Length: 341
Image 1 (cartoon, rainbow, N blue to C red):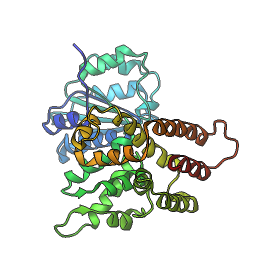
Image 2 (image 1 turned 180 degrees about the horizontal axis):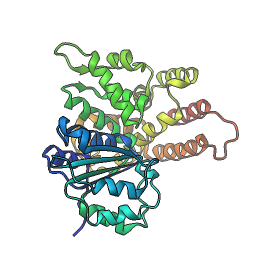
Image 3 (image 1 turned 120 degrees about the horizontal axis):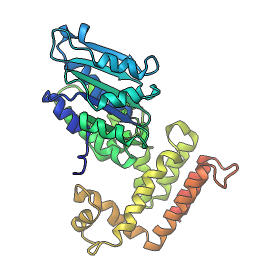
Image 4 (image 1 turned 135 degrees about the vertical axis):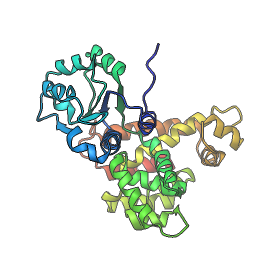
């Protein structure tokens, strides 16, 4: 039988139902979900009056695998469980004792291994299999840029707030995929909202996060879609003079995603229908398809192919390939000129 995919939501659902497993091995490049799961266990698995004797936090750089196993094999004192949380588990060398423990873990111990910035060596298949059979093996992966808007919307919705598309993209462009920082900024926005009106607007984003509501990736994308040369050049000039506000590294993925989808839109059997196009592009709402109807009016299929090729060239140059001295600002100007002319 195939191993069922383990997600953050599935792990948290079981935890909140108090269906604890003997082992939680949390690994991956995104520390946010690892911290959320381990913090929940630390704060909720045991009643507060049981934690002094039954909850232990260890650090991988300070202990050996044998010491972790010895701690895990202890029995809880006047409690149903003991909790052992190992932070920086990636720093533990010679994991053989742990690999052996995973094959027969203590039912009265909740062992939480926090392995950040990587994952278990792929060659240790037996170790992985033992963890999966004993408990939970969860990989926390970085979100892709295109996944950030939906994450922002879900996070705010869970707090009883709404946000428009422009504000969402402004935040995603400004903060990026560092979820710990992103949620911190979103919490700051939420704290600033008083009264019953819980709508996040571009003005609120500008006031609380410091992102210009007039000069941002969303507005640049809009100018490009509508072939508004003046507006696009105004925004590029602003970013050239304020490099900390944004650069080609932030905007290239945004524009590439749009033109990639625009190329797909040309193959839609009924591409003049907003609803059909939204379904073809797997969009949540027909509203977003309007940008692609506009794009098909302003750019031919051949031009879109050339734009995508140019973007690949600019991406390589922005990383230093075949580019000895052209800066990010000049590369962005060159790309925008090519797109609009």
